[in-house]
Image (tube, rainbow, N blue to C red):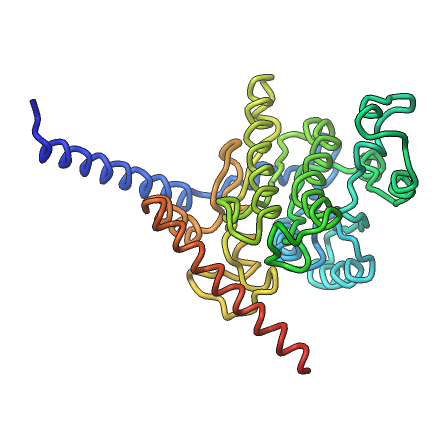
Length: 350
């Protein structure tokens, strides 16, 4: 019977073996050649390929648009601010005069609520919630996203790529759950989780028709669960879970080859989410992040960490004991909160 020393030694070798396998897998994912060209194909009728990028007004979304145009894709640029989108489109037209562009204006934080979409006469929750009151009537009057209209707007295009990039933390950021409003929470979940889900659901038949096609869902390493980012982290985890689930669903139906579902977990990026520090090997800029993300495509559905430095951080974090990881997260958030408070006080003085 082995003694405790032998058991500890075997466990140690097992941990080392797992670490080596993870490191080799990381190297394989980030060093293998890109297969992105599979999705930049001309249709049998000769139509040029198009990509739809959500949240394309700035940050990583704008960088995705730039990189896709550089790789030969025409673009549908989505955002909620028409003026900002128009500016981005004019910049892209000057940089890539051979590409074509369209604008899609829709507020991703305004996905219809259940009471707005329930069929007439369906009073399933009436016994619990009572009759429809003034607040429900007001909610029904709010302009919400019409996903069928979006589908119709791009139905004539050879759409082969959908980049679900739109997202972000609540405003104000770093808010405790106890201080979060119902409308703010609902809007943030709509932005990060429901909008990309329903957009993909609506456009999936078109993408399958134009296959091979790619759905790239942009998530975050904050899906591990960070304090003061509860709705953001949970929404991004939802995004990654349904990415995997839909990928398996397509495989079950024999459709995994036509449409690739790729979940992309992203760490800190300068030029996005208010981060303006100088780029480094640990903190890439938005264009570098977009380029790395697109290079991960073409190897089948799954979840990946897009940039190698973020992947290295993620592997190292998961090798730590849970209590150490929790302390690191709390320490990081203390620093983020201090930075945010400093910026807020400086802006007030200005």
